Image 1: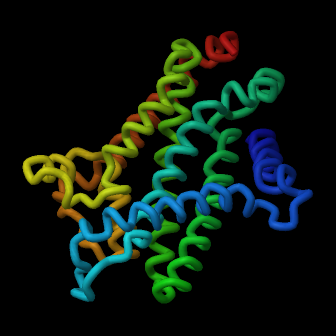
Image 2 (image 1 turned 90 degrees about the vertical axis):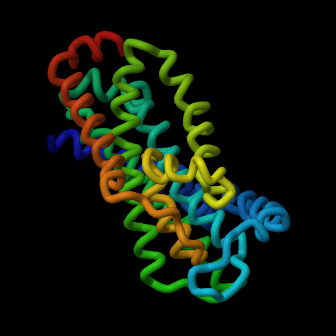
Length: 264
């Protein structure tokens, strides 16, 4: 376990420091270009979709589209990037895994740690933009975003690791993940408000969408747009999916570790 942690710490340092050491802004370059583009997109799309947003729960009138769009994108990108990078841990670190007796889930922890730091930097950028344009969001909003973002990253890590293990036997899985995640992004009311979903489907969205219960409270905290009510029995769905993926990871590593190493 100590060896696994040592390698994980080295990979965290590589992901956060070494790749940006020569730049004055350091790891900010991991998020700045992407979120500048997203900010421009939010301004452009806001002209089309702002009037589609329902009034804020506080009754203060029109909601700025950028306050609805950007926080949701921050969480989704943290989740998506974690899934994709976790699914590549076995391939990216195969030399370490094959030459050292490491615990693969522990070794791969560099992925969620780096992604959480990137997400925190992105949240800081969104906060600055919101503070300049509309007034500073409260500390509770920021903490809620960081907390639920961490949950999304943890779920993304166990999911990506499970699918990465399966991809050793079925390599097509690795190619299918990016388009499937893109489909998931557009099926999640992040770019558009849930109120635009046909009324007949809104109940199914709140009940069966595994990530809506995590994304919607953050967008509501920043924008004031009330989320769809999620039934109490549906709220644990992401946790049940995470437990299923953890079970799959442990089962594969317990009974098929040798086959996984031979296939790398």
